[in-house]
Length: 528
View (cartoon, rainbow, N blue to C red):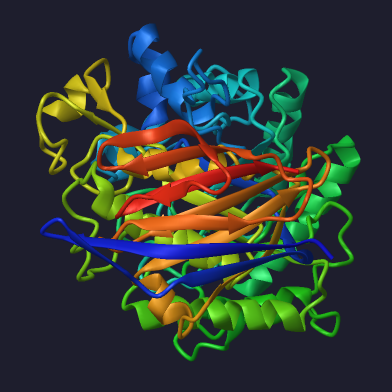
């Protein structure tokens, strides 16, 4: 058995007087395996439509490099965060409706490839297609298309949002198969131009009624989701598509593992869709991927809830077929909390980066999620919902009437964020196919203590004989590692640090001389 002991000595200094803290030990057992990693990703909604279509080439190419590149400069410094999945939003056509869409914010509308007369215009969503092409160019392993609403001419109310208190899919009777045909046709087209999708996610956050016309969206019952999947399965098979259907996108974790009285027809979804005894069992559909996805929203504060919700999802997944993977497929900060206040007010610094890194860690370690996907890659608003931030020399757009709404559709300033680079501590190094292995901190009282101080997770790549350790130091105290390793490990370690002063800063280190700055995220790459 290959077991690595990492001995961590906490080094504390105050007024130039140092004292030794109690030594902490991290035990990594490479024989104890958990989930196989599928991907780290982000979506193009909705901002990429303007940036990809209209912004100067040099600027948008820099953004694409930050998001997708796995290359390094001559000094070994990463040029990007190497996302391994890119999410492409298939629009419902609110953009073509203009003011009649009632979605007043120009950045939250989307075009549709399908016209009301049944013809297709594949030139639409040009900006999003530009970013999709860049993802393919950089070798992003997976792409996923997702929808928020059926095309507007198929909906009951002729809108891309739903009527109030509706709990079922906003679609005309008898048009479910038409919706499936539309989605299959889109997948077939992108296959034909070399930009095919690995996955299609046809329903987004079905628990909400989506009656607020702030964006495209539709509710759906479990029955709706099952019947749409049945139509999609037939449509995909008839076209001999390789795209797999990835169902889920549950709005919150509680809808996955328990029955909710407030949402009786669209909760307890893991058991509903993956229990062989359920009438809505998905396992008999050839084109359905063995996965189910949910969103981490409103489950990250307080820390007790962060841990409890993920333990419940993880336990429910253990009760199902072990071949079914859980995917955390969307997150940004929405709820109020004591650490970064809320999603309001953009923060390009380490506070938000550390908050999100803690969420990533627990989603990977407690739910055993095979994926971790951020919400939207680009943002022009004064909100914590992007990896790259756009503005016109201010803090971004504050409301729908802001003058920069129009200006930023053509050009502007753009900024990276510590959040983007902290995500890169995972996405750049924990690659598809790597296996998470056991990593325990001895001497701690469990996840609560670690969540407020120091967290580690580990991943192995047997093919390349590589072990990746990602450490999140939430505390204000630096850590020093003393590594006791088995024979065969190389003595030089590659390290990459994201902190207040660095973005994935590359530095080689001796295997017995490893350090972790305060309030940082750091990746250690070992070869054996």
